[in-house]
Length: 270
Image 1 (cartoon, helix red, strand yellow):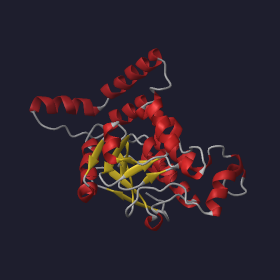
Image 2 (cartoon, rainbow, N blue to C red; image 1 turned 60 degrees about the vertical axis):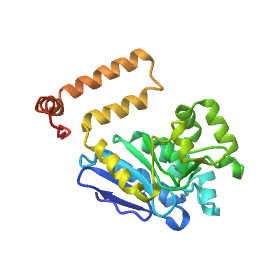
Image 3 (cartoon, helix red, strand yellow; image 1 turned 135 degrees about the horizontal axis):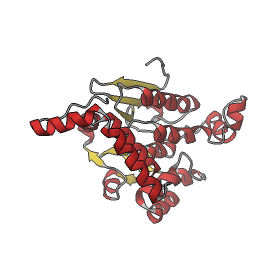
Image 4 (cartoon, rainbow, N blue to C red; image 1 turned 30 degrees about the vertical axis):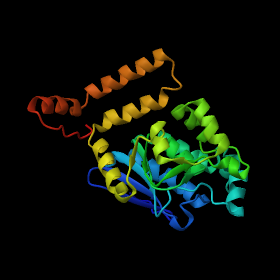
């Protein structure tokens, strides 16, 4: 891993879990221009690194991500684009839109480990993840209408797909806080863990997924990602293509041997 980051901490465990920690704890990890640029780069690196099997995104300190840092510079960049370059002027996704896209396009499973408040663009970041785990002290809120704004960062795209249009509409239009117990009940959070053991519980959960077959995990993520846009025939063909690719891997043979030998398979992604 060659890049160094100002607002991210990057760690990779021996079992292939890469943890990306948003590191602006004094601001509840609110988004500024630099952080918005760094996260997609870190996710792109993880996506192509064979040593990485699962990505966990979390926040330093007591917050996950408080959304846009409301300074004149950041508000201007959000409204007008970043700088005077052609790319900045012509970027019709702006910066937090690229957050959501980078999470979805990452070929590794991405877990949002929501350790504290997740608001606005921070909520969008969590919604874009494949799995959301929450501390019992955490909350989520779309937040935008509290400050006179409509959603960005994919919030109005992901939320209806996760909880249904009616519930998503209510959550966005009231901008109310969603506590961990409600998030788990409505399917927004996959699991809720105690705040005191949250980091350890997340590591164990991510490690379990990291022990799975890497090729099949990537192909599964792609299938799930495409499922809302494909017609049934196209999707069935995609499933067949994926499973045929899996059959060519050594991991399938290892799984069959392990089953016969009554042991856990050791997947190598080959």
